[in-house]
Length: 459
Image (tube, rainbow, N blue to C red; front, side, top):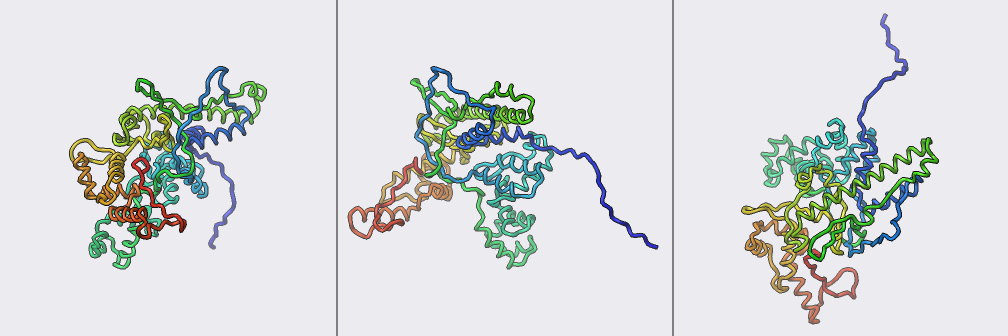
């Protein structure tokens, strides 16, 4: 006789130890990442909900000067961190993986890359590497495809996976990009084991790949950029850096009300939230001042003499100089701004990737782009400079640059080619003299005014 096992429901108790990001740490990191407008909204929300939190009023006789500045304008679009958190919140994830993914979203650069090492992040947070890997996998599942990549090859591979390729095949395709460009179908078929029809289908996907998953947009009308730091110039030319008034709100606990409500769970929870917010705002201000002072000292020539004097400086270099984690620098700089004698600019403008030189020190790519914009703004309208001519001029100034790099920088500045600039100058001249139909401007039949060429500062 054969016995058939029977399944019966049963209850079991077991202990599982898991590491989860501390809520206080997550709140502190979130406050550090917030731009000024988000910080003000967060403080206003907590002041409205927490009865034990108060904003300290200025002492009698203390002048309170508002920080007036001519602000630049940025696009009014959801912040990258907010978009990532919205997508992560819709994923079926374990609480610790969700917390890790949200933390990694705060580590992203403005262009969507993850610059910090995953092992360093896990070590700083005291979590196992497996949890960090799971959080990264969740983050890389967000849109746009390629976000959370740690290198260009990983970014391209993630985009190919989003277009339907298997992860391993996507990595192998990225490793053979030169063969795809050269259309070496025989070599690709031998290396990848795919028929030519499939290889041609994959080749058709490659032109749609982008080097940066998130496009860093140039300033345009929209949300006002509020300053977090104020740099004041003295009569002797010295600089003094301080926090903007709104970046250093004086938050305190209402201890009299706390004493009356002592012993209740609600009072304990509200007190913990208030103390965490006060500590996070103070730490945010100290970190901003520390990094801001380093940026001002490192880019003194840029501040005093103009954009041409910007020197190469990366977030990793700033982190190493100050003994900070590179993710802390990235989080502090993201969305923050500084007021320099009435002009507000993003802190990220103080940092620029280096343009390597065959001889001599590297140059800042932003400074070279500014030189190109200035050359185009000063060129004769009837004889615009071709990219090769700009390359020659830059090389006479000691800038070793390729023609294709000049074209890339010009396109980044949204400036047309020399052929189109010559045509625009001719149409502009015809419109001014009354000969010819003049340029057609989209948006209205009666508007015949020629488009203004941007100045180097506007570019």
